[in-house]
Length: 319
Image (cartoon, rainbow, N blue to C red; front, side, top):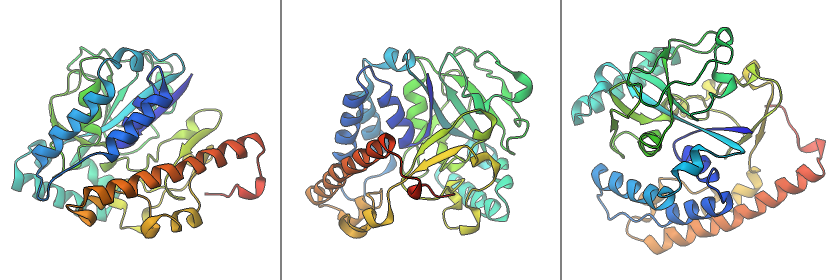
């Protein structure tokens, strides 16, 4: 049994991997994600509808197998708005995120006045490194409990109030949408069943690269990543001094593509959301580019399997 913890599209990827046929689930996610198509000037309402349609195509009929996976336990991270971010009105929301960015610039801990973490966890168990030490094997919260008990804050963890909610058929899809609800791009998800009432957004706003207390558990944590460093929150991307470090990462094995590999991709980078603006109305051009990058990624998988079969210590570097 292994724990899969993700935010945003990472949560979609892990949910797809919990389908009865994980390889097929991941192939379908890649196909559906690359095939997204938006006309110029598309607003959040259209993007939200398309995202929900994509997740329906990927997960309809598979909820039970995801929640009852024999080998995997999936956990989805989102954030709940506080104060000015407890409303999704346009100007108020924009002003709230502007204030949150300024607060975060002053110190990551100040972001707690605007956002709270929500962990939507496998109904059978919490991720072991997110269970407070004094609680031991605390039982999971009930999916039907609207007043899911918060851990505020977790002892020895961080400053963010954290709500713990068990996943079930009635909230799995909503949690997955919320986990990737980029402000001003995808609409917030309101009042997710089982969770405290409120608005929920992209989990990456707090946990962009998931700098979590992994060292609380024995054994190694495998961290597949798209870069060779960890940025704690989405608002820390432009703050190079905010890169994660310290004892939390002592047992983490981060696996990322070499910079030489990335340099050989079209445009010398991995595909990202900005490509929708780069290609604007050229759907075929973007789709071809993304499909080529997906095909190239198969080499990464083969290289990792070869390394796992015959490790080369020279390729293992400290974070």
